[in-house]
Image (tube, rainbow, N blue to C red; front, side, top):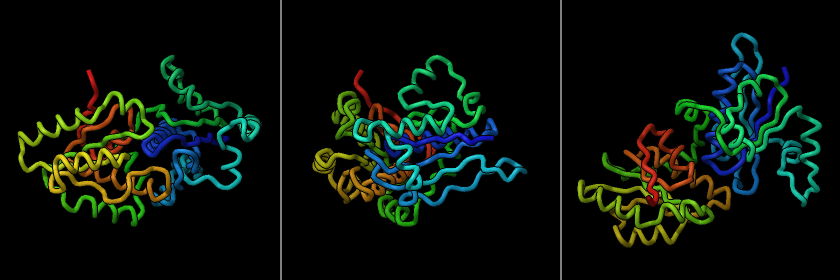
Length: 285
């Protein structure tokens, strides 16, 4: 049986949900899926810089790997690089030579809309999928099983959550290049929600996760350092350290009692799934 290959694309939250969907699919269908993490634009960080090695999943009694999740090797980074004019579209040519069938990220939305049977597609074996969008249902347990933070990341999480109380609420405010979050989830929606929480519970604390320093400064100025808890490292996602910090913020969000999130961002969705806590997306009517 020829394994299927899945290339994780997009940011941290997208990769986590796609990998969890692949694990659920492999378990359900019994057909192997080898999942590769490539460091590329939008993800300047390796899997092993963030997470402990993925557990081994085998088909029961067969000794055959049912699901794997690991960093891509050097040759795989070349073969599965994004096809573009700069590399003369050679990766796409090689991919078609190696794989019988290929599904790319933009196709997944339309295939889902049209009722495509992804289980049947994987059951044929030898396929290549490149995805930043989940294509199957998965559970919070799947996420927690696959994504166990490295000790250095866990230490960051413990530092972020040290001042949490029983009524600490998460706020994930996505900005920078995410136009949907910027336009649909303006800052005033968060301040209104925070004001309502404080009116009901004067001792409320907020944990703020954001990729925008100006947003961080404004909320600290408005509510003070005692009420708004946030990381003291720079709000950036353009380096390996920045991604490690983002993961620590995601896990800290998961430790809050609930999260106010930004439209169109998977980051707070994954945090709430990891923590099994409620999520409310704040967006304009």
